[in-house]
Length: 384
Image (tube, rainbow, N blue to C red; front, top):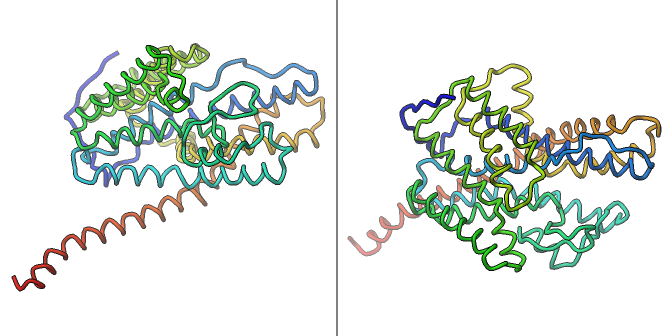
């Protein structure tokens, strides 16, 4: 495998080109999670009918590890020259909150309403008022009533957003430093948190959650972004081999113990994302364009697919012939979830994001104008 180093580049945050390769990676990560949940739900239907569940029997959650590596890469890469600039941290947090909050709150509210009006559709009760508030505020809490004790919000897949919020706040907290120093400080803090978790057997809910070794996968993405900005690139054959090795390693090791996950699953996820980030652009063929669209809609797909699958289960149980193989149900779940995510993205997520970003930009420009005019007004008022 060869690695060449081009001239270093810095990407301004105001004009970041869309990395189609990473959108394909996002599509892959989201689809793997959806496949896992579709197969799990098919297993629920199979158990109710006393038949064998469809396979393959894999832990499909490795898509989450890919998402965390991508998050680290995107946050550092997109921030570009914003590091060490006044006000950069607040602008960064504003952009990230605008990106994730509206859709998450909307789907959480939808699930809450369904749980209050049709509680029989939920397998786990919605919980106490404090639990609901914590779910909206991205604060990790134990989910009461789950078959297995777990720290999950009301919209269960929001557990990954509880980590994302940690990443946002942590990165914003070091953005007063140049990028390389900021990531170095963040590395020390995250390593110390993980070490303390095991050294002191931390049991406090939020500290235990936020010090999980999985947070180290975010750092992998951060360093990958620094490598790309330094000019590192992979030729097509090397990128292809690296991507294949990453996918194979992720599938093979996805069921590993939590404390080893950054090594046995995180590193393969890093290999896949590195192939996308450092390799040449994929050809703009029809399959690539479809994958890019799914990548654009990956956040909507990730959050909404449990609701789609649960709804489809009700339809399947009422209308499907019991003799139909359940792998057909699993495939329908994946297709339906993917098709539902695209209009959610096009008609809600993207317009809402643009609207809120426009308002935030307008406020920033108004503040700049005020800062420019105020000294002049002060000078006039004092006769200077």
